[in-house]
Each structure stands twice: as structure tokens, then as C-alpha cells.
Length: 428
Ligand SMILES: *Cc1c(COP(=O)(O)O)cnc(C)c1O
Image (cartoon, rainbow, N blue to C red):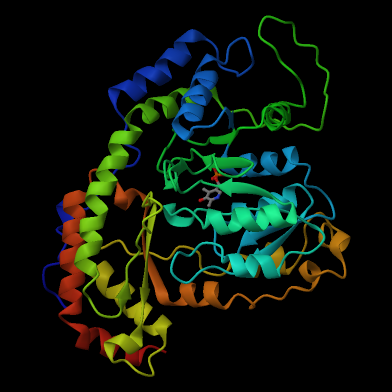
């Protein structure tokens, strides 16, 4: 920024994700050559293979592949019978899809604040927001770290609620020896290209141990029809259904990626903790950690920044964040922000356009959910103001050496905190 050489050399900065190998190409071509380009019971071999492999990988009895992670969350709520007039508790910090899924089923999302360290649902706040209309909780394993499933399962049991895990950022993460997606009634994840288990486009996966829920998910995915191998399709819709089938090419690509997933995951676990260890001693920055009872899938790293710890009294956290964002990017570290506001402040929730005529909120009139005001999520708001992230493809399994250059850049910036302080103080 001041004219010197950046800490991260320009020629090593580019990272490609997904990593596409000859095996992935062969998997895609074999579906093209098979001529089986739609999924149904006769021809969905690549879809069934992905489902069997994912059920085995997560330790669940059933996996159902669908068109994307958002559809997966929606189908999960539909299969559980969540509908109009019901409330679903969702974390105030997540990707928008976690909050939209209840709306897709005409239920009202009720947001709960997050924990300031894990960034996942705060169980105490979840409990405060339960009403007699609450039917389900969507714990999101945000950034790759499993939510507090012990506390949330306890709450769900006490109040008779279903847990739908949103594991779209946490493929392969483990909580007390169990894979995420295998703990709640249903687990939903995404295969979208940027995720830790990517396909060449869009895809999603559901997991459950309950055969009846699995059947409802399958019917929901395909017009409510039962399509059985060896039997002629009867075109009878047995329940409300959608068309949320996955493309067999994308299923084959994802299965090919799954062949290498464990190796990629091991490399993330080798690359990222040593990088975080180099940042941890720097004052004024809190780096993410995994507790002893859980593993972190390191999909996103979020760093909280504290002006007071740098002696910058009177400087707003957002001013420090903006200064560090500029300086670190100038050094070649691709710092970013993930989520610019708490979910409940997104227009879709504040303006309540929904399905028109005030629905689905009108069905919950007079309840806490209908009266909920934006701004009542102090932790999510503070975290968004005082943190920066490193995301997704920059945490690529081959990025070990690059991450060490990022750490050089952080150390260099922390050696020049006077410059950062001047910038932060002069920020409007
Ligand atoms: C990506 C994501 C989704 C949605 O997945 P899509 O496949 O993009 O629809 C849902 N929840 C979270 C937390 C995500 O990160």
C-alpha cells in the first residue's frame, strides 16, 4: 500500500476450486456416454451411487440427493410436516437460505442470536424464543464448526421440536464422534461449487436414519410420485411434491470428488491450524478454534478484531476492520466479509413481502415472531461489525504454502500498527 513489495507474491496468489482431475472428467463423460441424463429409478445409477456413498460417509441409514442445498432444507421441513402457522428457529448469522427455507414451507423463521466465540446458535437464546408454535430448529454448522448439538438436542427433546442440521459449510465435520448431518432428525447439505464437497454446479444432499422421513424426502423431490425400479411409472402424486432432482452428471462429479474428500480434508487439517497458530499471538485478533469434542471443516475463517487490545481506545471496531481490510488486501491477503447484516435485517424479512397479504407472518399474528424487531441480535451485529473472513477456495487443500505467506502478511501489518491506527482513527 505504501509502495513496497507485497508480502504475498503476485504469481502464487491464484487458487482454483474445485480441483478437477482426469477422474472427474471421466465420471462426467461416462454419464454423457450412458445416455441416462434424467434421474429416475431406471437410470439414476450415478444418483444412487452418490446417495449410498454419502450415507456411508455420514454414518446414516438414508441419503437423498437433490438439486441444491436450499431445496434440501425446504424438503426437510416439508417432510417433517412444518407448515403455515408454524415457527422455525434459525440463527441470526447464516447464509440467506437457512432463513428462506421456512418461508418456502409458509412457516415463519424466528431468529436467535449466536455465540460470540463459535458463531453458532446460542442455545439460551433459542430457548427464550420458543413458543407454542415452534416446530423445528435449524442449527447451522457455520463456517464448518459443528453447532452445540448437545444443548440443542436437549432443548429439542424438552419441547418436542425437530432438529434440521444445515451442514452446507461443514462436510465431514464431527461432533462427539458423529458426523454432522447424522445428529438431528434430518441433515441437509449443499454440493454447490464453492463448498468443501463440490459438484460442477449445483446439488444438495439430505441424510436421515428414519425410513419414513427418507420416503417423504424422495416423494417430495419428484412430484410426490413413487418411482420404482422395474415398474412402469404410474404418474400418481401421493403428496405435495416439487421437482428437486439432481442432475446425474453433477451426481457423478460429486461422487468422484468424494473419492478424494478424505485426503483433501486431511490436508486442510494440516494446513490451517499452523496458519492460525501464527496469528494467535498477535494482539487484538481472535482466531477461530475447534473445541476438543468437535472438528472444524475450515470452510470459512472468521477473525474478530478488538481496537482496545491494540490501545486504540475510542476507535470503532468497524474502523479498525476497514483499515485492516485495506492493508491486508494490499499485502495480497484476500480478506473479505461474510454476511453484511444479521439475517433478520435482510429486506425479505423486514418488509415481509413473502407470499403477499402478509403471509406467512399473518398466520403468526400476535406471537413473538410477528413482533420481533431487527436489531435485537447484539452478538450477530457486533460480530459482523468487528470481523473479517478468509473464505472457501483460499482454504483449498493445496494452499498450505500460500497460507504461510498470508501469515507473513499479518505479521508485517502488525509490525506497522501505527499506520493502521492512523488509518482507523481518520476513518469517517
Ligand atoms: C450454501 C449454503 C446453503 C445453500 O446451499 P445451495 O446449494 O447454494 O442452495 C444453505 N446454508 C448454508 C449455511 C450455506 O452456506
